[in-house]
Image (cartoon, rainbow, N blue to C red; front, side, top):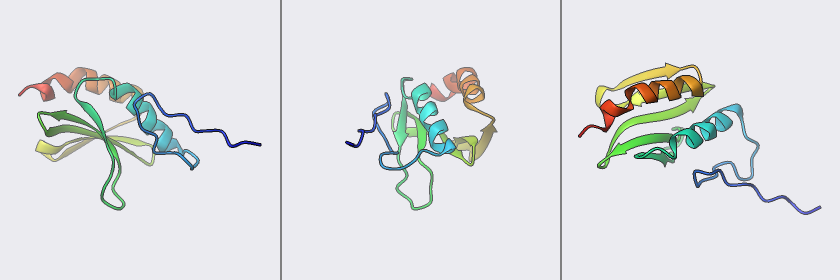
Amino acid sequence: MPKALPSTPSHGYDRNVGRVMSSDDELFDHIGDALGSRPGWNYEPSTTPGALPSWCLDVHGEIRLSVSVNHGAVTIYIPNQDHEIVVDDLDALTKWIDTNEAQFLQH
């Protein structure tokens, strides 16, 4: 039987080719679907061993927000404040981003 080709998510990357997706991977992909279509949000792969990939809000080359998933926890990191906020799920993340994103887009 021929091997099925993996589908590529709508946000243009597939970091799960050749492996079974974990719940963290699935949640991260759903976050990518939600954030990838928003202006300024980009996927940032991890280049440091053991570090997590993230979705980042980049304004003029400066990362203002970073979102990652680890053990089911969605973490929003605010680099200029060195502050992390943990939210329960994709709905809570979307609500937080909708409420707070504008302040991080300002120059």
